[in-house]
Length: 284
Image 1 (cartoon, rainbow, N blue to C red):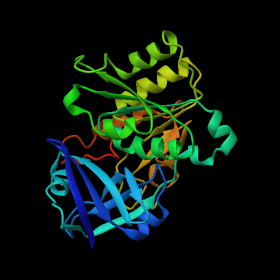
Image 2 (cartoon, helix red, strand yellow):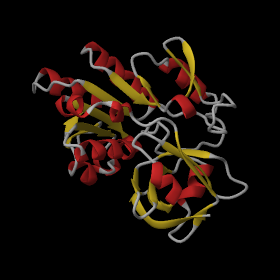
Image 3 (cartoon, rainbow, N blue to C red):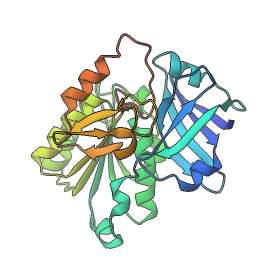
Image 4 (spheres, rainbow, N blue to C red):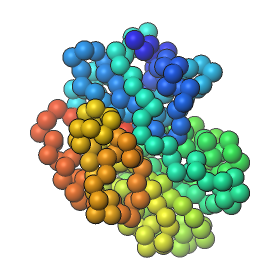
């Protein structure tokens, strides 16, 4: 059993939990995820690792309630426990592969939508620990839906965007990105986008206009997390890839987002799960 050490309500339907999982925390890296089950009757739910503490042996996850499975997770309280907490799964962020010199001279932009801010945080934090301060665009429908803004401001230059103009830039994250580049003179060498699938599609199209290499973190239906079932397949550059073992990050300019969204919509009538690994999500 994997005990919940602390629980924090980030918004009415978004919950942060720190879970005691020493073996996962020992080897976790930014960009990876876990698959959890509340009990023996629960679905296996993929959740992005939002933070980890090797000394405390804890993993932080963020879950947004949108259906039965995510609601079951968010009903857990401090002191309760998950039956299964498997990980770390997937490949770490490609940023970890850069040598120190290349890393320090890189101008890195993150674009986060909705609960996608939480899984951006460990990557931004890792960069800050290595002497790099990235820029992070955080988008939400309104200011009350922002998460992890205060944490992010400690490790990055933060730019806010809201659909209704209640905080920061009035408009979509793509509009703010273009403003930073075309009006404010920002230059970026790399971009990482995490959020709802539709947001990632159009943000990736925008970075393509500026020839900025871009990675996106894909959510997909996952069952076994080992690449054997094929449920998490996506098409990247015309080839079938498996998110659970080859992702979750892929080249955003090569992903077939339309196919990925069609696959998501196949399960719209089924009970939904929603987490910081799902991108409607925003994370979305």
